[in-house]
Length: 303
Image 1 (spheres, rainbow, N blue to C red):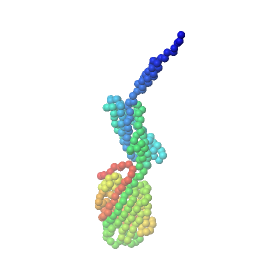
Image 2 (cartoon, rainbow, N blue to C red):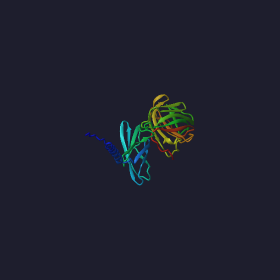
Image 3 (spheres, rainbow, N blue to C red):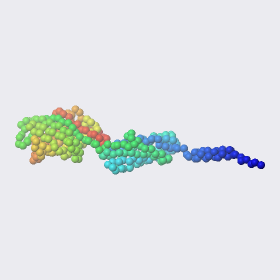
Image 4 (tube, rainbow, N blue to C red):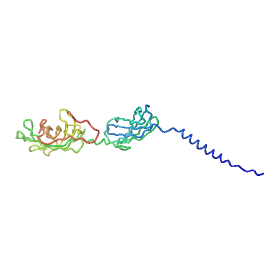
């Protein structure tokens, strides 16, 4: 009697079916991804940032929270600036605006990068800042200066013109000047100021004071971004080629074409005696212009 082994192909099929069933069960056991951040973009400057975060797969009527973090690195030191924003979804997608400021306005060059997270699911995206994942903020290149020149008509006896005992015999005369001077405490180097009047000349060597202010008593400058219309200065230099002289002065920029611009100054010889002095006087011709380059935006200097 011969006994044959019987094949059971159905058993293999059952095993295969069981494997498929297990995979299907596991697949359905994993929840579908919901409540995600699709993007985050920001603009940033030396004062702060404006951030927009986009979310999707939301449940209308549900409140959500977005946590955001910026890493601000200046001079090798990193400061973490973080915050949160809650919102209630009105649809399945949302665009959430967020604005904020740095702990203080930046006065040096910095880099910034950041991320945002939807706390309901932990969905996180990198913030694109000024078009890049790492943005450079140029804040150290603030340059405030005044440039220009011109002529004023000075009349005696409002002026003193005595240099080394040599008196001016004219009742009126012109004082001309040209300059490029920088604001600061102390002012940066590379300042230039030349003053000429009959038979005499002052050459600035060192600007020791350069205070730039917005004075409401004067008209605003032609460039509204300059932020100042008055330059109060002092310095030392040469009088008729001899060192040890000094000067104090005030120049204003009161718009174009320069006819409202004014100057006043006193020049001292090495002994401290005034050799030229006149009060606030409008330019007969010429122009003085305030400039500001770099750094955070400042309010316009308006009346």
